[in-house]
Length: 102
Image 1 (cartoon, rainbow, N blue to C red):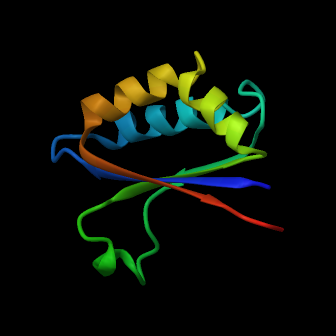
Image 2: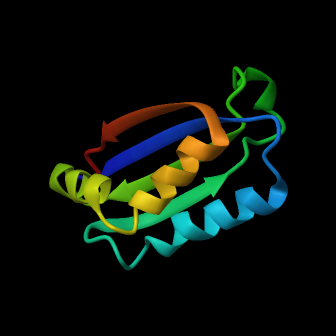
Image 3: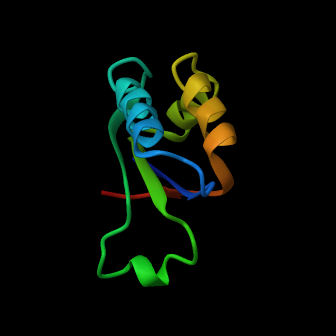
């Protein structure tokens, strides 16, 4: 069953658009590199619901083909620079993983 790995981020106030763009490129580059990662999306909340985001101003959804793939993703060499940037650019993050029966 597919796993939806959802991560929300609270950016530090001084983070620039260029830093966010670079971070998004690194995140998107994981596709095709991490075994079991089938799709990844990275971006800001929709304007119509941004007021309900409780300060989280960026998000990522990664779709993986199994719980085992989530473990591989977490430790994969291409994921480590993405996590390092998260630590540099964010005040907080929230991860939530869901398994879907399709």
